Structures are given as structure tokens and as C-alpha cells.
Length: 100
Image (cartoon, rainbow, N blue to C red; front, side, top):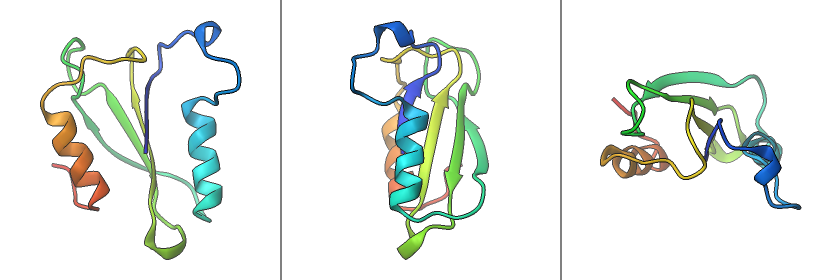
């Protein structure tokens, strides 16, 4: 899983570091994922943005039962103002549990 805001300024990125999409593409290759990503339910993680701003994609058809995910905070910044539910959702995702 890689978490980043989509409003980050690419000009401010540090040279040599890949962005979220490129990092997730690498992980899908490492995990030998096949097929397209699956859209999962949106989450409300940033308390400065109204509504469920976090879009989630998951690649679930990967070797050894691994899952690769991308969570994108729509209109978010690189250092989002995460609410109290973020850590709960993250642990649920890591443990392979459904997030409700």
C-alpha cells in the first residue's frame, strides 16, 4: 500500500524518488500480480477535506496471496491531516480484513 496526496507538486519532489503510482507498479511486478486493479470503497481519512476523499485500488491476484494497494487522497497534500480512523483502517488492510 502506498499513500500520497494527488495535489503534491511534482516540482517539489526529491530527485531519485518515484511517485506513488510508479512505486505501486513496481510492487505489482514484485508480487507477480495479474489482471486489473479492483476499486474498493472510498474512505474519509483527511479531516480537512469533506467526505470520503480517499480512493482505493487493490491488485488482489498476486503470488502467495499478497495484495498490492494504492490509496489516493483526492485534493490531498503530501502530509495529510489524518483522522483517528486512519490507523485502524491501515491495520485492517494489512491484516486482510474488510474495511467497513
